[in-house]
Each structure stands twice: as structure tokens, then as C-alpha cells.
Length: 150
Image (cartoon, rainbow, N blue to C red; front, side):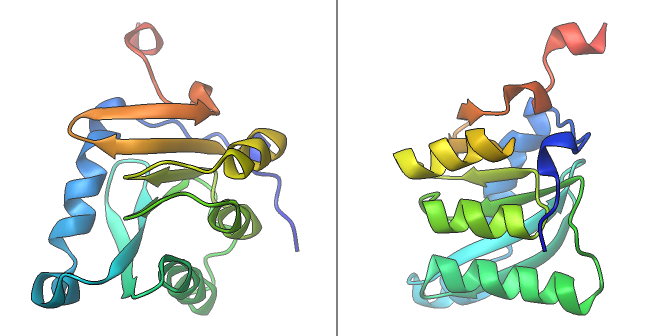
């Protein structure tokens, strides 16, 4: 099953994006106790967290989020944002696309293969999202600018 994420109309405010890492971190109960887990969170375009899952592997955390969405009959996840606590790999980009998620954000760097795949599929890929800063690697049209407001 493949979804057309390039056509997804998601648009997000930079201010909303900047809140996602802290919202993700604040919801990580097991990380708080152990300091050793990755997290993946599914958010709406207005920054509301729908699901958070933790695991020692960031890929497993993403699988858990997508599995939750499948059980809830939410696929494809049009108009949603996937936020991860680590790097954005090719595999995480692929998983996001297969679930119909148009925007993948990570607190760390994306791999070059992740950037290439995101560009090919029309997925917005954001890395180094932290401290009110972000690098938008692909799909910048989904991140609103002041000109969009006027």
C-alpha cells in the first residue's frame, strides 16, 4: 500500500514545530527513569500529540506508533507529523511515507539517503529540530512563513 504524500495539504507553523521536541521529551516517562530510550511521537498540524512510544531502538518506536495508528484505523496519516528523538534514517523516512505521514522531524541529522528519498516522495524532512531552530531539507513549502499569513 502506498499513499501520495506529495499531494498532502499539511501546512505547519514554525512556532508549532519548535514545541514538538519538548512535548516529545516531556511525555517520555520511561526515558525519565532510565535515560536510555528513543521516542517517536505522532502529532497533529497544530502540535497536539496523539501517540508516543518509546523503545531502545528508534525504528521500533516508530513501528509502535504506526502500529497504534493502524489499530485505530487512522492510516493513511494525512496531515500528521512524526517526530523522532534521534537521527532521521532512510528507513524511518520510508516508514513515514508508507504510513502516509507527510512530515518527518528529528532532533538530530538526517542521512543523505533519507534526504534523497524524502525529496523523491514529496515528504517534508526536518532535522536538528531543537532550541527554536530547524533545518528543512525537503518540502519547505509545508512550513509556513510570515508571507503565508498575509
